[in-house]
Image 1 (cartoon, rainbow, N blue to C red):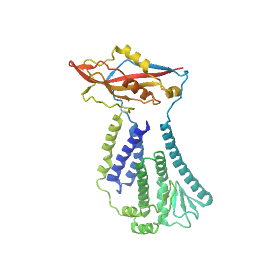
Image 2: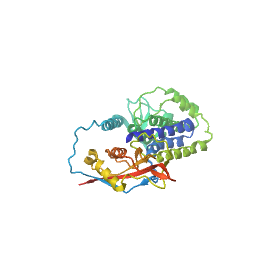
Image 3: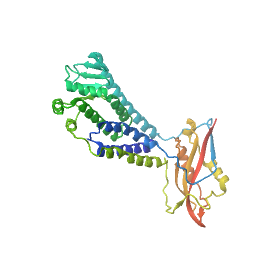
Image 4: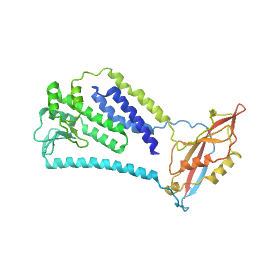
Length: 391
């Protein structure tokens, strides 16, 4: 269930980052870029969840109930190794490790505050500690060694006043939760650079040349902690280039071009229906959704209900978890009466309900084919099956 979602998130985040790289990267639209890079991960995570309430196509039959008793003994002998659970566990462990790393970095910062010399100022705190190799800020705290130059102080104040730490922590959490998505790491890196562009612009004021010299003097890089804003953030060349960059052209087009991109992504993702399985189809005929004479199970609805009640096995995992609900099985009844292209649509319940529904429909005998204009045709059919646990 998670794999299709992860793939869709990768596609959405890749498209959104591609837009940024082509239209916005290295532009002077710093505020716009910051907003976009903060919102883009959220869009990439939400868009794949959108499902348009399209009317299900096909002939929908009377609801059929398949009941199982939760009190009945459930045998678990012979169950196969649960690979899905193992993958989920590994994924969560990596997420937990990444979050733990963030907590360790916060602890290091806390120790710097406790061990350093703290000076309160208007709206921020100055913390001097011998272990600080390069000035940096975290929320309203500015860390430095013995002294801090005026341009550097203005730079770090810009980070504090711009609340850049909140942005950084958001991206840290996103990258931790979605550690397998490379585009989120690229967005995180670009957002850090946009922060530097904003702080450099505030600190340089009308003294770009002098500020560039100060920046060059502090190009020695040190390892930084997660969520902090360091003055010597690399690459310095991009920062100096941005200091002297002129106003970006075609700003309106570059900003608004994201609208059609987002609409296309929304339409594509919202139109996708979750499926559990699809059988290969040998039939190449045109598939109808509305015909003069719909296909029918041999013997009618009563015979179909009897077949399902006798052949469906309520999955043990679903019984144990008390999972119930309606599974809509969509399939094509071919012009020869053979069923193919079996899949489930709509809400997915898991615990084997979809797989069992697909199995029992796939194994059905031939139907009486539907007809249109006096000719046998292939017809799409929707069959809702209700699973219900009775205590």
